[in-house]
Length: 115
Image (cartoon, rainbow, N blue to C red; front, side):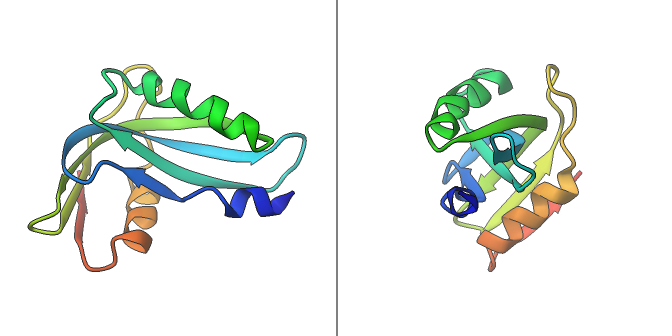
């Protein structure tokens, strides 16, 4: 079952623009194994829209989710920059340092900043 966690990508964000993001802890139902993931998209008007879309997808894998907070990401793929800032009104501010760590593992040749 821990193999389910490895199938979940650490980061899924839009390829361009400024958008809301959430930091989410996913874990095996009834288990202790977990990992934190980043999800962000321009299609979400509010942070909870991202979370509400994620829950059923994780449920089918036998995983449960907890939102750890949110913020915004500005992604410029031409300049290869990512800026993490802000907070979610509903979920509070995500730990941007954790988010930046996740982003750096995926976007290795990017300049990534946080505010």
